Length: 165
Image (cartoon, rainbow, N blue to C red):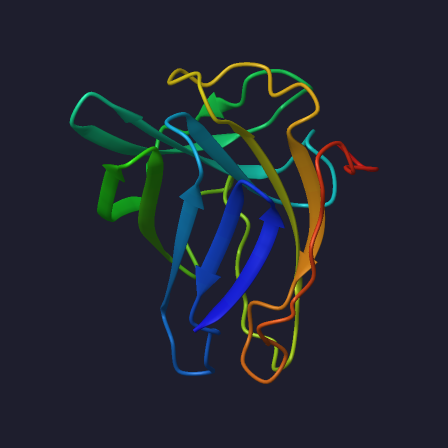
């Protein structure tokens, strides 16, 4: 399992994608009771996004497309699914999964590339349960999702360090 400390309040864990895999699973942990957005792309506009929320006792993963620098638009076809989610002691954790390749034109196609990495965007709120403007809570990182590139020191970002959002 690889781990990336996105921010002091946000952590991503994943098992590096192998050549024979058809699905990717990631776990996002938030030190708070808000939401997390994970995007695939180098800039917000045009990125494929999954928005993770937890309201009451219900966790959700909304597959969306960021068509501008505003709230991403939900895809007609929802390709992400919640595998598990918890909210305990002020920490919210989501494990979500998606096929690497989908038939949805709004989805980033996660074609296997040995040792490859993917440009990813992260945004969050530790207190708001409804997805809204993230302010400075955003980071853009290149993440080694594929086998032989992943390590526990994948990199780190900090609050407000998103040069491409």
